Length: 317
Image 1 (cartoon, rainbow, N blue to C red):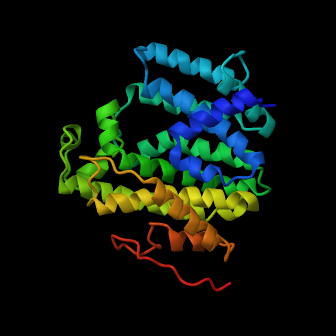
Image 2 (cartoon, helix red, strand yellow):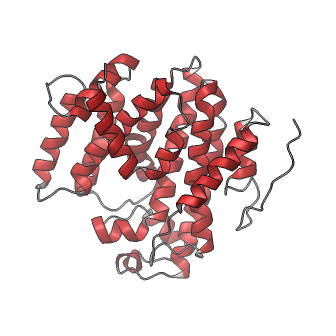
């Protein structure tokens, strides 16, 4: 079992580096919350190898990822508290080795790949870096409807990551020389990738960001539709995470889709307000899709207005 030292280290990493997700994680029942801290810490340990290489060469980064994978899968001993804790959680909940392997493969992609030609290419990357995370989370929630829940979990994971990509365009260029907007999307709007590389915002780039924002919003709708397949005591937390991540879309729209010149961020008071509003509406309905449509910044399907209208009807249940 995961010991107190392993749990404390994992929780500390989660609290410091995953502030948005941490808000939602605190709503999980303890049986899931502690394992979620471990999962998130593992994701960050692997991610840091490629995001902050600390002078490691590409070959050394790949070797370190291989070491992390071997420890995570229990194939090699480790004294790293996060990796040993993750190995125990993986074994206890029957998380497939394949999900760990494709996650590590996605991290390895970031070592040398920094541009994506098509959305299909980006989607393939997200299958490892985001969808695999959704799958692992679903396993530790121990749903009785795994077959129905997994496709939606993958969609929601991709939605979260696509929101992050669109929010962090400037940060990704400045810190890592990466651009996750597909070239085909940019070209469809006559946007030049060179403008993004030089941190110059244009209306054409904004149009490309808007297109991908709407794609992400469909992923949210598809993902939220599957929350009902999760255990009841986990549904509010996942729904709240979706509301919080999607609220970045409001910030992006308020900036006229310009995340090239500045990176927007949610304030703590806004997060607290969204958590409270989500919980309030959850008290009056057991329909995740209805609550999401009421509280989130994602327009209902078919509504392409640039702002999600305030929608606070009195509870009717």
